[in-house]
Image (cartoon, rainbow, N blue to C red):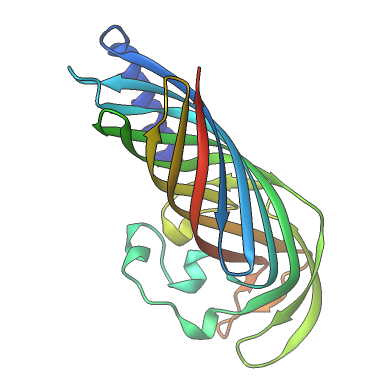
Length: 239
């Protein structure tokens, strides 16, 4: 958490020190993403500082509300210390510990995540821009859902769960809560309106009412995550 805050703080200090050399770009967007048995829609605002002599690079912050809808989804064990047995950057290269990965099946999943985002863009050619954004910190709300806990050894039981309330970008499976990220290409139709298409990667997470999972070595867990990859389309409006 401290590392994430330091990175965000350093970014804003850099932008402040270079404010007189930059151009501001403010925009809002609506994006829809379609996955396998799931759908998400998001409303976002971004405030970009355009850098460089040609103002091709953009970096900044924003806010995004993502609403997720899924059916018959298996949410699997979330904490990195269980899935890979470690934390930190090493989780990128670690294999899952199969014996530690259980799941909760939700016939219906719906949650809403409101997060501060970090945004990057690069103007490739006149009206064409490439962009990347990722949620950094925020909170999630939504109704409780009934689910079926399925242990790795075949045992199962009924459970209830609610969306994990606090979201924080850390590293891969170290992340907490529900976080959205997007790679996209955008075409600017005119001075105000643009259209975009891309690829969205979305973490959604539920916390069960009790610690339903006990790993072979006795660790308890109540957090379960679904990772959704989806194609996205959207429209943007510049202010």
